[in-house]
Image (spheres, helix red, strand yellow):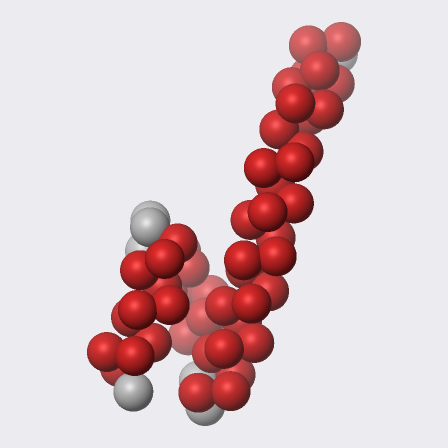
Length: 60
């Protein structure tokens, strides 16, 4: 349990960054007219976070 707590403490700043990027991507998807399911599928299948944003321009 102590190791898991330490791992969570060390990885929390990175997780917060990913959460905000995910929120920004979801907002951009919605503004472009895509539904929430598209945002989920793109996030699930595209490994590079910046490519998610580029991919929306390719689709639009």
